[in-house]
Image (cartoon, rainbow over the protein chains, first blue to last red):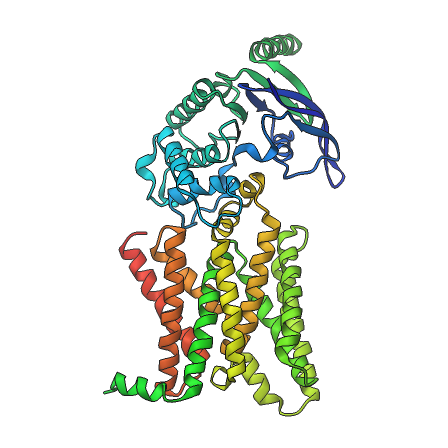
Length: 236
Length: 275
């Protein structure tokens, strides 16, 4: 089941082109990794998918199953202030804000939803803790729980393992894989980590302002391998 | 030795003291609530810039014999929208722009006052407040507007938390971030205009910044910081007003000093609690 298609996305900041003719389709249950160097337009693509940046031309179609606002989003941690006073529960509940129309308070159902997601991520015991006092890995889990409150269909993670130690990184990947396999969530993950980061991906999108590669993980790995060989021969 | 009961009974035998307490508490409460969001969003300078714009607007109104609030409210609301735009636009240096607007507003205000008579007393009251000279009409207006600000803040509390904590996430999940930023700016503008009578241009920022900063030393959740700020603002205003009555000091200045002392105490408490 196709849930979104990007077709011929062009994004410009002032005079510089950030994305050029980017097209791809996303199916329900996909685990898509978006890779590319710094400045290759990964973050711009994220912002475009979320509707934070308007494309100059081209469009993103959401196929009936979800709306743009139903993408759960894990931002890069740098966006969140280190000294912000907020309890874990407050942060996670704020993910439920989009399902509340004119009610000025969170309902019991929304609180239950927040608790369910805390349990899912194994961090229920942290709910009264201060967000700023948590470790990097715990903070990521809290923010994923918040994203799950916003949507249980699509989760978009922007470089989720930046600054985490190898062990925490591994357990975070495990968790994302679980969300994909067990809950059938569609995952879009931006990553620098082309090693273990790609391990559970089903599809890869390699970006350098335009799409260099889009397809299954196996095809991508073969192509990269071939490229290495060619590169190796040329150097020899 | 001062007898507190005597002090209070003397203090509240004056109608002007009761008016000062009512109007001042209402403004202090609103300023402290909005202050938490402004401080965390790094928008403290906007409050400061607005207070200078109010000076200019009030001075012009006084010189032209217009009702001060009728001139100040629309001017400051416009200025609030403008300052918000500036600080969100990365191409303009927000700090410098706000400093420029602040000093220009003061200068224009002073020039207008040069043309009218009795300028020193007026400038003094605009700079440092004249809470003891509030009329019953002033107090009614302050109370009504404060209640509106307070209710709007409560009604949109969760949205204000969301846009303060993580603007991008809020926008991505469909919160009207632009609208709520404007709302916060608008409520701040109204609060600052009201606070002018109480604290004056030079001191109004303290009502916005101090309670939030003090509370953040000790409390860890957003809600507890909000509640603590509100209580602290009310307590400090009451103590400041009482101190000014006892020692004959300027009410605005006394409130600021009490707030500064509270900040020190909260900082020490924060260090002791290892927060």
